[in-house]
Structures are given as structure tokens and as C-alpha cells.
Length: 212
View 1 (spheres, one colour):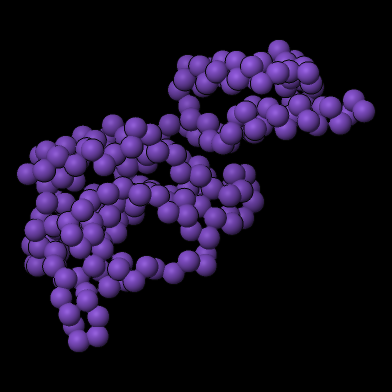
View 2 (view 1 turned 90 degrees about the horizontal axis):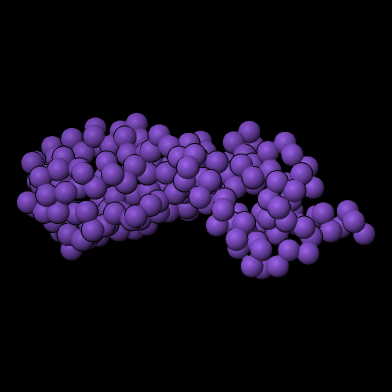
């Protein structure tokens, strides 16, 4: 049996454009579990925008790809702890991946090199798909867009007052504010997607324009 926990990121946040879910999705990220023709196993992210086709290696099943979660309906995080548990030696995912790898081969079919699975590997693949169905590895932690979380219904001036910043704030002032916000986010037990520093700088720029 194999321990696959090394392929898991310390954290993985999937985002959507635009972040506002009341607007039509232009692109979104997805997390994929992948097994290539050499038996290498990885977790990767991919951005879907409606134009990209399926890579040839995946189309011909030389590389096997399994959908873990996506942000089409809004930003979300992966449940890293659960993934590591199930990818550890003897874990539910690890056992199934071992069976798939053992039964996955690449053959020439007369036109292309294509992936084949033995009967046991097919059974394992079916079990794996059932296991990851319905975004089983998507975290239930609440995910907020940085701008929405920081600003909400407040005016830009109110945001700066709350942060204790002015339009003359230095880089050090802004960095300290971001550090404080990250501590607050941790205490709230949520995830904030996006660039907090960038949002603060945009707020400062708008207030400066209003003061002219």
C-alpha cells in the first residue's frame, strides 16, 4: 500500500470569476486528482472558462482525471484534513488509487496510444468516483470574497476608519492592517479569497479621489 499524503497542499482555495455569485460565472477553478501513464499521482487545479477542450492525454485516458471539487457556484476550500486521512497508507482513496495504478496501462489501438484498465481497476475507479461524488472533499468552511468581507455595506471612509488607516497610510501601515485582518479571519474560522492588501489600496485610492 502507498501513502499519497505528500501530494496534498497545506491549503487549497478554489476561486470563481466574478466572485459575486449573483452574476454569471465567466471562469472557475476546479481541483483534480490525476494519475498519469507513469503512475504519478497528483492533485492540481485547473481553470475552466468554457473554451478549453480536454487535453489529449486525458481524452485518450493515458492520464486519468477525477474531479474533487470546483468553484462554479462560489469560492470554496478543500477539506485538507479529510483528504490526508483518505490518502494516507491504508486510507480509502489510497487503496483505490493503488488498484487503479496497478491495472492502468497504455496501448496502441491502431490510431492512438490509449489508456486501458483491467476489470479490477475499473471496479476501483467506479468506487473512487462514488467516494468523491457530490464534492465530498469540499470543506464546509465559509468562504468570503476579500472585497465583500472587508467592505460589506460600509462606505470607503468607514472602512478606513475601522482599519485605523488614512489616505497617507504607508506600506508598513497597510501590511500591519493585513496581518491584523488575517488574525481576525483565523479567529472567525472562515476563509477569505482574494487580495486583502489590494482591496485596501483600492479603497484608499477611491477616498483620495473623493478628497480632490
